[in-house]
Image 1 (cartoon, rainbow, N blue to C red):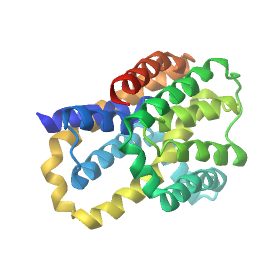
Image 2 (image 1 turned 90 degrees about the vertical axis):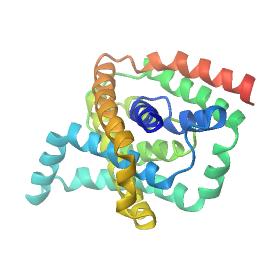
Image 3 (image 1 turned 180 degrees about the vertical axis):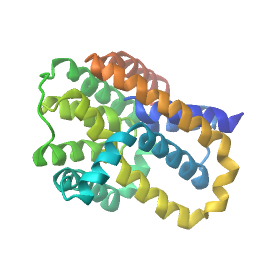
Length: 248
């Protein structure tokens, strides 16, 4: 039952712009549900990665075909550029990130900041242009900020793309394709530590994370198409305030 709850929570909050890391930290602090377990973390992250790969399978297949034909090198370069900021933050500020998980006050503040970021999407200009090299770097910086608990990766990257004038559907797609190298790279490194055999004991949570994550992507896609990403802001404001009052 515990694995199922953890999987559902991971799949739901990993993709919706509410910060999965903040919810994990909160539930671990108050209920002890998310005890530190590296093999479980790897299983859940690989499960949500699989959901992304399957959901964007058509776009990914097109990129592979174009790459083989030498046509999609520009877009792959954009994904590479966008991945650099998060890599730098993770490499040089790992200890600071770990400290942030232990401070509910900081998490509450960051949740409220995340709420304002999401709310700002209401005023983003609805333009139709594709991603360029500068967009990829700035969206990558937004992704790097989401390493800290309370800041949503999907929320910050999609909102940044919208403010830069990227077409909403393209901002949504680029945001999640940008997550693939980071999750895959981290997952492969962590598998070396825990061993692939250890992942099998978390199959139920991984399955739940995959299924819920896939449907969360469908939901978020529809919300983005309707231009209503900001609807998550009130929840973030309320949750952040509650954490500051009762947990800070």
